[in-house]
Amino acid sequence: MTEHLGGPESPEKLAERQARYERIHEAGTGGMFVICAGPEGEGVGSVGFWEHAWRGGTVWEIGWSVVPEFQRRGIATRAVNLLLEEIAAVGLDRAILAYLAVDNEPSNGVCRRAGMTLIGEAVVEFPPGNPFRANEWILQPASARS
Image (tube, rainbow, N blue to C red):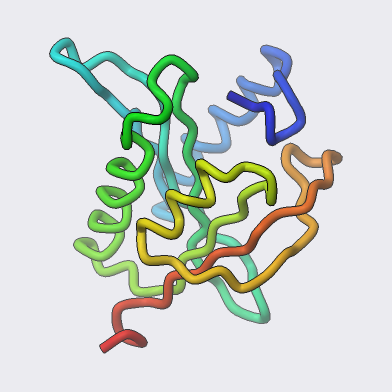
């Protein structure tokens, strides 16, 4: 699942990430959700959003992952669309960004299907210390689209 993001992380790094997700949720500055699929509602990935400083302002950055055996079924697209609906429903009216590795066509396709616009390329670090070339996608806030 981390092929485009620098490969697997240690248990310590995963624990740090989980603690960060809990902090942003408690502070109201984002949220992470489990993606469930199938008749048993099996956890097959995650989708979330968090504050991101961008061009002198604050936007929402989104990200997601789906375990390999559930990829290419439209699950990520559905999860991202539900996330965007949730962000809009609670009135979090800011631009939404996503950074996807330029060679990760399936995830770039999720952005296209979600109605996001490709801005161009950027060099981003994820995890910290792992720079990579990413496509930068944006969805303008509802107030800017009206």
